[in-house]
Length: 219
Image (cartoon, rainbow, N blue to C red; front, side, top):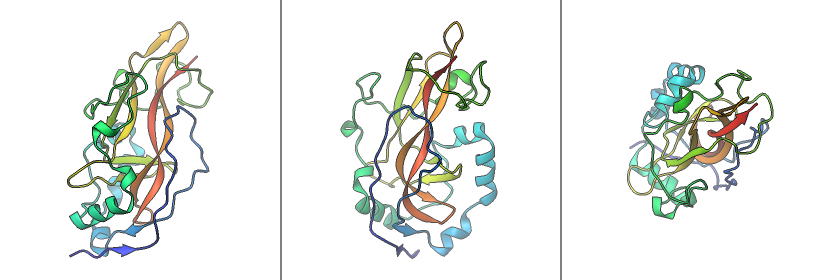
């Protein structure tokens, strides 16, 4: 059986659903467990670099791909240590845009602009370099039990998902249209939410801020 190493007590980070710029100074919470030596040997560093350098490949992989396989004991322990991150779909808050709870995990955010965050049709090619306005562009919002994410430092992390029971849901957005009006473009901006993840820089199970996407307007 793969060994587990307890490091410290769990911590709680606030969850934000606001469409706001990334905080570059966001720090991870304290680690709780770490991967076993056997699991660390299976981590494909080249695959991590490929996903970090290719936004399209990352967007295609983030719903289903795993970097490391966790044992039942590890996921059960993770759920016991941080139960607030795992819940049933019916217990999720209603989506702000629809008032409903949906699992649209096959709907790739940004489908109207290629699914690649930061690529807006016209305007600033850097995506979020300038300030963006209020919510002119109608967002398509959904909850999904994502497998991979990018943390605030630009590194791929794996979201801890149980092998059974309630998953860890992440709310995400796409744009319903690439344009709002003359001179106004809709594109995917980044926002931060907290998630219970495996950080491959340290191999720790930890709570960190991860990047997800919201539909924003750039003039």
